[in-house]
Length: 283
Ligand code: NAP
Image 1 (cartoon, helix red, strand yellow):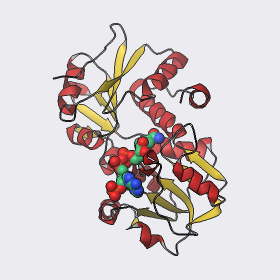
Image 2 (tube, rainbow, N blue to C red):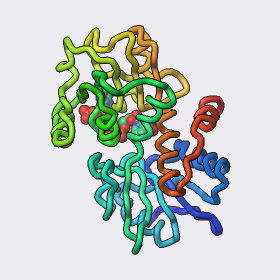
Image 3 (spheres, rainbow, N blue to C red):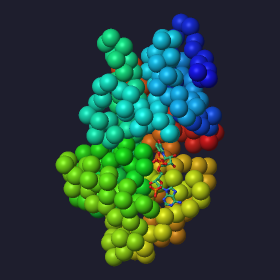
Image 4 (cartoon, rainbow, N blue to C red):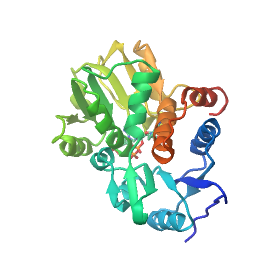
């Protein structure tokens, strides 16, 4: 196997598995959390070749690793690898946090949704309860955040995706828990929402899904899971439509990390100074 681990003796080791991972801010975020809470941990980013994820996790466990985060493209594979899953991860069908339980069993959770909801409601003071909410995208990120969004009790959730079948599939999976609606972008014509969460990767390509005019109330808010130094394509689109609250995914990134840290260490770090640090000089 071609995965390289850089474990540190005398510390509890954690890592991020992904491909690519070089750009990741997670090592820096967890180092800040550890410093703040006086935890003796080491957190590294591990590049895993496409077909080597299960071996990489087992090797990390053998070497004494304590837990890991999982990012693209392995979140669904991580779900399959876990022998036990927390209910929100089970429902999401995707795992971003894992650790080794009694007898070495691999346990999985998904902290993306909790991170997103906390950033929206606590950090930004915005409401999810009783609103009409549009989620764009039906990939791993949408899958991960929908259980937490459902739990926040919006009046209505619609998932719209470029490939409508994937949105329909996702809505059907959640249908037993909450009546999520699904369509393609054209199906949004004539509908108006209080908030839009962009969980597509379109902003990565500088693109915005083709949304009909009038789909967002100007008094509403738009959230892009992607973050960048400059406003993302989706947040620029929202600005052009007079939407005053426009938020990128940096807060979610730090909040989902804090939730993982809490699971692993039993201590909840302060997120505001870490978000500020990354905003000022770390992006
Ligand atoms: P993914 O599984 O590859 O799914 C990509 C989604 O985007 C699919 O729904 C895809 O539609 C859609 N899409 C891609 N290009 C598009 C375009 N040009 N126009 C319209 N739709 C397009 O990716 P993911 O894991 O869900 O990640 C999505 C985004 O969330 C990424 O930008 C990622 O960085 C971000 N993210 C952020 C955080 C955070 O902590 N802030 C956490 C997780 C993810 P089809 O189904 O039609 O292909």
